[in-house]
Length: 309
Image (cartoon, rainbow, N blue to C red; front, side, top):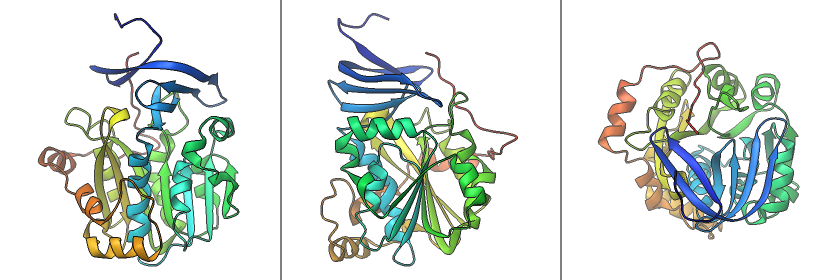
């Protein structure tokens, strides 16, 4: 591969497509107990967190991903959510968005990799915006699968913000039917979850998105997929909700905009009522892929994404 002079971060989007960004400075390059962590200042996307070679979020466009992940389920909850679970979310931006909702009294964030959190606290201040200092936060360093399996706490909203299920990484159990079954046991009867679920572009949607939606549909009455374009990911990116009572695609524009105004959530750059509705308008190819998907992810039949490097 012949790239222009300089230091480049080269990332596989699939086995047939790569994305490259010029690196201005490498701030962190380390192997934690669970994954390889890289934090760079990039020429295009700014300061970025990259785990096991896959971009997790960047200064330029993390607001697209995090606002899209958090606010649809927070606002779709059938009651004002007070007790929130975050699985993963090590850079603190998911936590930042959750804390914008004044009804929230407690956020439990469970992440397996304490070192990534410490590095994010130091090097990604624009991501977390000091959210780790909020007294509403209960930070637990643990395997989210084991925590969800064993806790007696009851949550209104669960937000799953873990890396893709790489065989070498720590997250693949979080994509299984067993995990969603344990999670259902600790959601309130009218609770709702959302899981980041991978790329949804025409060549990528069967990597994980459709299988995650199919798996969640085995556990919850409503399993609703939505997506948005995240430039640093090189594709549209999917999310799947799960609930026995809530279909977030049906929430009205007026309700959302009134909620945001009433609760003084005014600093969003991506999300509002009109955006909410558009997130759930999936293209024809993706709707067809969801219908034809047969895979159910389990501990005995896990899903692993593999990329040539």
